[in-house]
Length: 156
Image 1 (tube, helix red, strand yellow):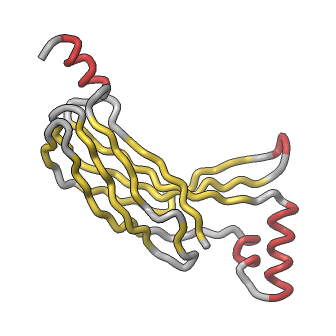
Image 2 (cartoon, rainbow, N blue to C red):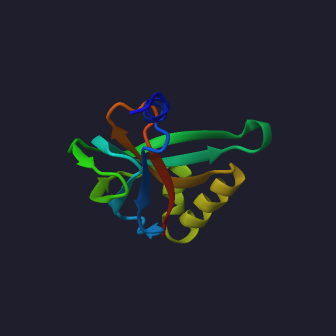
């Protein structure tokens, strides 16, 4: 392997691509996300493992007082290692468990009737908003920057 190819390999350039395939929407009462990770090798690689995260990007406040937190709702590590050859695809199915963590206003908004309306008004007044994402990182042997992917998901 030439020096240039070793340098590219070490930096994770032209090694592999990771792609998440998950549903665009899941039910609010779900406790897991089912999907698959598609790994496409651009050179011969050794996959050491796959890490998945389900996160909430929770924003509250307005203007200069706006604050965003990233809250980990679920985590899954797949430690199965395997080799993948150049220009080949490998698919790994997963079931990522998670547990929602609702703010007081979000819990109130889930109620029916006047309490639910009060919770929704409070969320609006305090500028509360939640966005959800699933993240994947594929751990490759001998690579500094592992391939990853992020997909947004809606709860309905």
